[in-house]
Image (cartoon, rainbow, N blue to C red; front, side, top):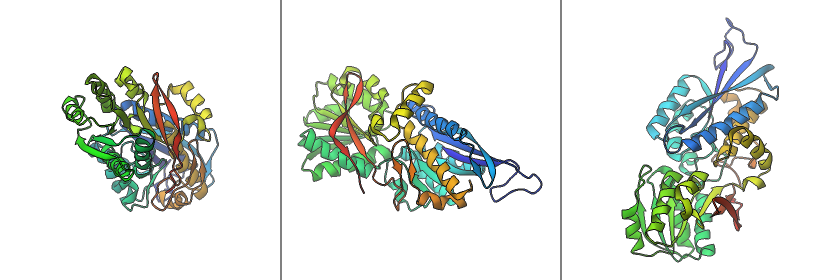
Length: 379
């Protein structure tokens, strides 16, 4: 989401004397896939941001002595890296002062350089590939655990809880899916599991019979998939149709209601992970759940993090008493913001300090936390 701060008659550098402004209009946009197979997740991010904007507008916030009105601007990057850079440049050209997004690692990473070149703070609510914050851009932040943390928890879970000794790995060849699969493979191997094969698909395929047939011949104890729900749901369904009874495990991209609906009965007993605590255990999770669902319906995955990303930007602006990027960026680096999901603090890379990861089991169409498998994720 983009924090676009358009001053009524003002430039980003200051007030235009020909058109003196008596207030700030602060536009915060949402950048996520609003079309295509991930549009349900993109809408979830956008709605989390929308709720944060509406809440901020009830607080009578003043910056630099001027009242502030927040507005939401929404952009669709279609989960496509090239589109993401086009959207990012468009927003820069429009004078944005901050960014919340993008949703996917594959779109967030290339867009980060565009924002960084202009000194515009960027907070992703959902991109988990470590490369995003490890590119060295001082403007890049995230409000959930990254794939190094998530991969470690998943690898430990596969060996210690699921008792897997042999594993097959599949990824969707995206920055997110391949990155998480590689981190999982390293962690599971470190725990003593043997990876029999590592297969690759893409983020558009829905026919996995060739890959699954090769895997069936090896009869692994567990299959791990790095990718999104639009692929993991059909994949698991086809896996069961082949009478392959391996434990199925995936990450946050396949931990949504959409995954359960696509997989149908095959989802029962499979596992997934999400960065963060279960919603009911988040510091302000129950209040957020009630208010969000009353307005927008069921939460998919990332809405609470999108809400917190907007909240963190606004908290830094309030601390700096300014919405200008060069003024509030230093305050993001030392921020301690009591969010819905956690106490938001960033480490030296811009990653969430002490991010948690929770593993879930699918049961009767719902996610149930696997107790003992929630990690504090300290870096």
